[in-house]
Length: 594
Image (tube, rainbow, N blue to C red; front, side):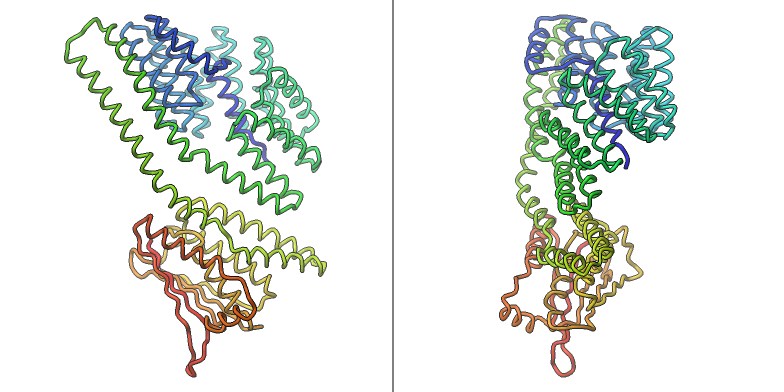
C-alpha cells in the first residue's frame, strides 16, 4: 500500500511559504494599521507580509496586496521588495495549481535579483522555481533548479536555503523512486535543521525519513522517526503535522496487518484534522479509512468512508467558497482604492492623464468584481436544480442493494466463501463506479457500458443465472468520445429483471443496443422477453410489490436535464406482442442528446 507523500509536500510548502510565521486575525489588523503609518521600503515589506498572510485563506487577496507592494517598490526603486512581491504572486498562483503563471512571476523575480547581486534572493528564486516544477510534475527541471539553490546556498552559507533545497531534492528523488538518494538528502536536511534548531523543519525531515524507511520496509526504524516527529508536534501543538504523521503511522500498521493499532492511529489523525478544519487532510484520512475497512473486508464501512471521501473532495471547490471569494473581492477593492491614493502621492502629482489612467483601471477592476459577484448569484439560482439532479443521480435502487445483500447471505449459508468474496468485491467495485460517475454530469459511453456490465453480472448471480444478456454497439459509435448522463439506463434494465422476469424461471433475455441516429442523437434500446407491463402491473397489485423508485427517479432526472441543459431527451416504452396478440416483452427506447 502506497504512502500519502504528496500531502506531506503540502505541509512542507505551507511551512516554507509562511516562513514559520503564524498569522492570526489580530496580526493582520496590526499589519494594516502599521501599513497606514509607514512609508517607502517599510511599507513595501509590510504589504508583502500582509500578502503572505493570505496565502491559504484568500489567495486573491495575496495577489491584490502584492501588486500594490510591487507598484510602490517600482516607484521607489526598491528591487528586493519588488522581487518579494513577485514571489508572493507566484506562490499564490502555485497554491491554486496555475503553475505556468507562477513560473512567470518566479522567473521575473530571479531576473531582478540577479541584476542587483542578491545571492540569498537568487537562491530563494531557484528554490521557488524548482518547487513549482515539482508540483507540476516536471521532476528533472525541479531537480536542476533545486540543485542550483543548494549549491548557491552552500557557497554563501545560507542554512535555511540548504535545508529547504535538500527537502525538495529528497522529495523529487522519492517520486523518481531513487529511495537511497532521497534518504541521503533528508538525513542531510535533518542535520541542518537541528543546527538551526528549526522545530518545524526538524518535523518535516523526520517525517520524510520515516516515509522512505517505510517504503524500504524498515518498519521499526520508520516508527522511531515518526514517534520522534510526533513528540515535537505535540510540544509545538502542531495539529496539522500530528494528523499527517498519525495517518502515515496508521497506514504503516495497516501494511503490517496490525489492524487495531492502524485504526487507533487513523482515528487520532482524523480528530486532529477535524480540530484544525483542514479539509484536504480530512479527505486523505477518509481515504485511509476506506483502505483500512477494505483490507478487513468490511464492505459497509469501506463504502461509507469512500462516500465521505468523495463528498469532501467535491466540497473543496463548492459554491460557498466561490461566494466567499466574490465577497472578498468586493471588500478588498475598497482597500485597494485607499492604497492607490498613497501610490498617487508618491508619484508627486504627475500629469492628469496618468491619474485618469489609474482611476480608470480601478473602475474597470470594480466593474469586474460586480460582474463576478452577480455571476456567482446567477449560479446559485441554478444550484437547487443541479443539486436535485445530482441527488437523483446518486440514488441506487434500494431493491438492488437488498437483493445483493440477500445473495451474499445465500452464498455464506451455503458455505460458498469464494463466490461470496467475489460477489462482495464486484459489488464494492460497482458502488465505487456509481459514486465516481455521480460526480459528473456526463461520462463516456464506454464507462457507462462497463458499469452496466458489472451490474448485469451481479444481477445474474442474484437471480441464479435465470437470464442472459447481450450488448450490441453500432460500429459507427466511438464509445470513448460520446458522453451521456450517467445512470439513466440502469433503472430500466432493473425494471425488466424485477418485473418482466417475475414469473419466468428460465430462457430470460435482455438485449441492450446503441445506435447513432445522427450527429446529435444516440438511440439506446433495452428490450426484454418478459411477461409485459400489463401482467407485471397486475402482479405488483396482487403481491403488493414495491414501486420502482429507480424508474421514477430517472423520469424526474430526464425532466431536470432537459430543463437545465435545454435538451430534448425522450423516453418511449413499447409493449411487444406476438402473432397471437399475447405479450412477449417490453422495449424501452431512450433518445439521448450527445
